[in-house]
Length: 352
Image (cartoon, rainbow, N blue to C red; front, side, top):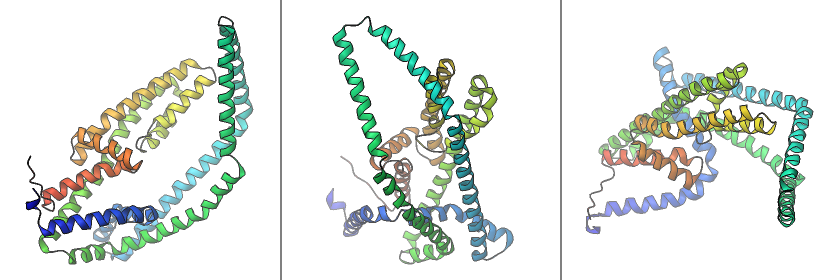
């Protein structure tokens, strides 16, 4: 088997290993630049559209798209901050009511527990009570440690770094948008004509995959929106449309999805004593989670050219190895490997 590996193959293997080791140390500090480059790739079709539609230079088209992108970020940021402040004020205003409701629930729970414990042996009751008190004490200590002044101050010191990262991201994004054609031509100048054609094939394939991924996410979210709206029309018709829209927007977040809205809502309704609504919301959350877990791999596989099983395995392994980003990177790695194999960059003729 090793006789079939040429000197060129060994060179590629060594360079790949060196690249992986370098990436391990460089990638963590290069996140703003990487995100800026990926964003520039997403925005590049819009730049080309402005160029060909209005017959303007790339610099002018980049300026237009960049300003539109900044406006979009500004509007989204303003909306998020405004809603967060409004919800915080509303929470503070309603805090006395929530506390009274919670106290009533705790009183009822304590009365029920007392009635139940009267039928149990005293030793068991004492042991259980001591364990509950110890758990509550440990939870209080952990919460106190988390909310102490040192942690709050440490969090505050990260704000300047976040601002610097944001500025670096925006500047790098603008420069990447300007220089993408030059960077591509520079890359291809180091390649032979045959290899250059193979790399172009890979780029076209990956571009198709990225847009297919976004299309799949949108299709899944539409199904989630319809099911959520129908369910909430029966559970809470007065706010069904608003909550369905919020759930639809949050559902774009992979892994978390709609459960981030419906789940806490269900727990809250149960906590205040509305068991019927809480149970209905819990059932709706389970249904939405089941839909996402069953439908998402199928749509992903259809749009990005992988079988549902391969897509599910790639997403799961990527999630376990890398974390949240692995959900995206896992399928992309498989697609990149298949594309390189189809283009002839990777040749595997191993038989056992």
